[in-house]
Length: 163
Image (tube, rainbow, N blue to C red; front, side, top):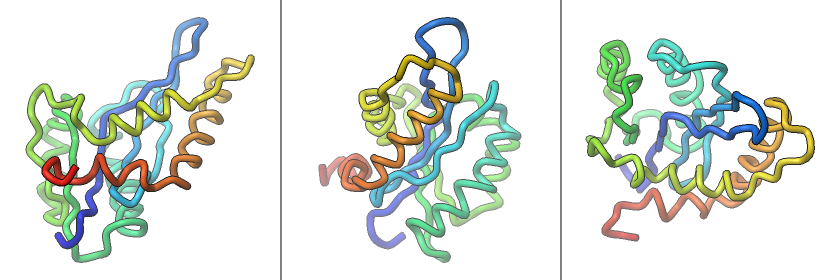
């Protein structure tokens, strides 16, 4: 892969309502060029749904926004059951352009996208309406705000030796 671009992935960031049960979960990716796409996940994400996100969202948008066709995608994901499910590893093996970075078992806190989720949680301002749709609007507003500040993602995506 040329340059320092890489797709970064984490399982989910969850933004919870303060009253009552439930919350809104998301899957998103980022690269050194900034945040990519954000997908609202309804219910519990399973391996088949994860593959659909990789196929329909991650791969095409990474290609369009960050890494041209023909270049490798260095892909970071934690070791959740969904990421390590046989059907997911099989799908990834059929996409040699995606190079999955070997990740430590307890390495979730060093995943570069955790910085982005932290910024998101700090910047989300909840109004009096606490519905899932209101949370979703707030989350998307902040995501778009961070997209206008791509440098937020640049440093966390650099190799540790360059930080």
